[in-house]
Image (cartoon, one colour):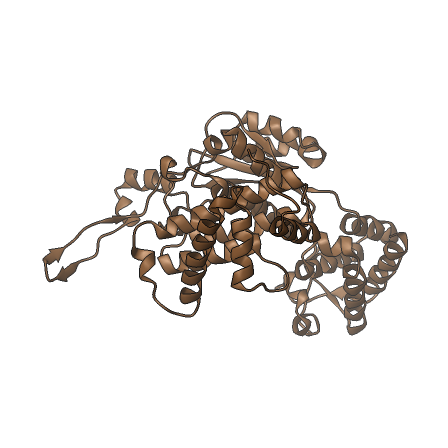
Length: 443
């Protein structure tokens, strides 16, 4: 990377030589990602000592600088490419005001080229947490935002250890109402990429947990409630309990329920629809050793086989948090495909066979095959715009979701029993089970 570092430094200095003070006080650093803006005569870069502009040659230097850097995988992986334009532009404007330009240019570029993992902390909504914070996955912590949370963050090392004081200050200055549950992660990305990576890590944790919970009914975890109470980054996703408490004090809690007027054959109805649910008891769910260990395995073991569970969990979450049964059924079907499918599309018959072969007891496999037939039939009808009465009969949708949970656990069993970690091993496993070369242990 030294050659790239030196080349980038030369381009920065060349651009600095084409810089000048700008008369335009309305700078737009992010706008430099737009070709039309950076080539316009009004394009300006902010700096502590006033706006800066670049000549046509200077813009060309900046464009070559950006192209040189984004060719490097470690830059692409760590920075949002659009956002990077603004940082490179402000780097040029900063160096323009300095005397030791080459030294500062190299120093600033080193921060972009040679990055360390970023620490990201944010409060989360619609999550209940009791007890101590927990370190989960490779570099993540979840729990109530307090001193104990900061202590566990320190264990992540790197910036989490070196800047624990900033974490404490951040938590103490949070304006969100109690209860405050938070998530922290060390991620490879920088700035906006770090934020999105950490938010994604949180969502994967929640989605995997919800998919793998086997006794959802017993825990009052009901689907088809819509995404009003879906866990997310607080402030982007509302924490319903906190908002309810705040509005109740002012008498405005009516804003949280719907009270339509309905005049029908039975007369007048003015019933209230309330979409508030109890927060997801994440600490309680992860406290189950079997479930907690399974989620930990999915988060820490990096292989293409377990990636199936990550993808399936995203679609399972879309099914679980849907408000309409047909949307939920379609997402559930995609989740099952993600668990069982292949890069080359498989016919329904092959998918049914794979589903059945995951059953330990050969005597029960015909029943499993029939289950998959019903699920696949419903998914196909919904996907093609049809209406399915079965979705409104009994608990068929929950049975579909339970089938995904069952399949996910069977794949985890395959991972531990047959040491399956890649796609070729996954394909071979079904062939061997089909011909009796390998069999599931009796217990």
